[in-house]
Picture (cartoon, one colour):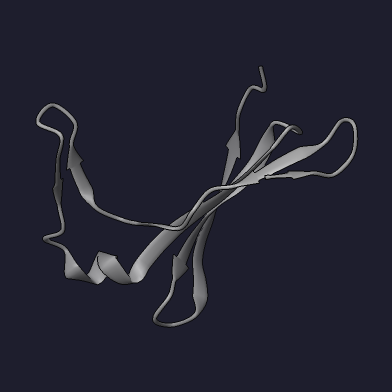
Length: 73
């Protein structure tokens, strides 16, 4: 987390691998090994908009940028 000024704060979330999650049973499945090379990362800001990045660690490249919006409370 970083405080840029009195109005702007950012938070970097840790890299996460893509997995299938069964939320009812709270089980995680790693059956798609190709997806284990892809990670996602988010940097949240108080500006209420950000990108979620899909990153291929093995290829050292950004796979996709997904624009997001969130409400700051």
